[in-house]
View 1 (cartoon, helix red, strand yellow):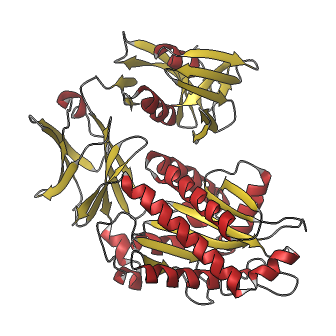
View 2 (cartoon, rainbow, N blue to C red):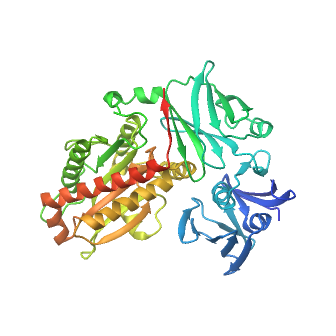
View 3 (tube, rainbow, N blue to C red):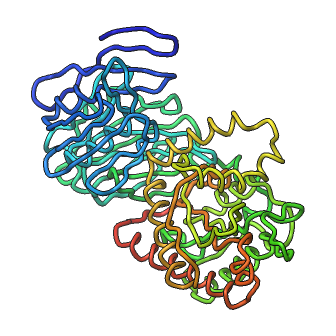
Length: 486
């Protein structure tokens, strides 16, 4: 069905590389592309089961079972949630799924990368035998991100040559040279070249801007090599923060940014007996800093070390300039319900329930004070960043970090565990690294406010967060390879 509505355009695109070429209906709503679920899963040979008048869909593809629901941005892969960012929509009794996230998901399930070319109206399933599948280029707050997509994890080396060429040698790489080089993925790219050798492949990308500093790493889900190219103009705006140094530039989990919430004239939550959130979380942050320093494994960076105002955007900028590997924002919760108790950890994503929305609203108040007219702009910002972190490793890793922290809080504190949740926190919005926001306990609860006032409880909270950092780092570094920075 082809139709035009205000803000909506429908047409068809072609899927190639799985059997004969097949047409798939495409719907564009407010510049977001969606694909017909019927056409897409039919083209890849999946079994489908529709319910509730095409509002819910169960899919069996290979050994995996997936489920989707109209207006719900989380879908299920087996028993795990997968964030589609943009919820499926229903048009003319047909469910449409957001293109990019759906293809990432199917790439993992099919173990064949699906590459979307919106200009040409083509989705290409990378041919068997090729394991270097494409190039992405994303503009970041503090620089640019060049990604080389792979079908599996491969060793690699990165070097920059004269003329702003970023060269990536991929050991064991097999590349379809004509397809990879036929178009430039971004206006900042002058040229793309690819070379196939006996035991490796090389992808070379010529950029318009000077490459002064870069950092490379491997990222899973989906597999890709990421080259982060620093914007030196952004770094120079950060003043004294540029003096922060890593003790091991190549350690993927090294710099830990600790963010004590609120401060200065922003008290945060206040208990009936006058205990202020800003004081509690600063004390926990300083204790965590001491533990991290004693470990000699990590370099802690605090967004504030005293009772002063630091805007949420300044906190994110400091974290990015410090080239943090993890960002942990520490808070204490509050509720109008006297019985509300427990610890909880959040990661950045649209809130999925009213409680998470309320918590985000409370913690975002500082931003609203500093930027009274920024509500609409920030919502667009949040949507972009969520898309951004999904295309890199940060959304998945932020969820894993939140799970690790919450597990340790549950083990180390004598308070109820409220589990992990997701919400749109401004302080996490522009942080370019895995991040989580911790609500240690409720200042508004009589019992927990007494606990928060005790030094041993704050020390236990700091130790729990530290234990979570160690476990996350150990797990993460098993699967992550690092390349040097220049």
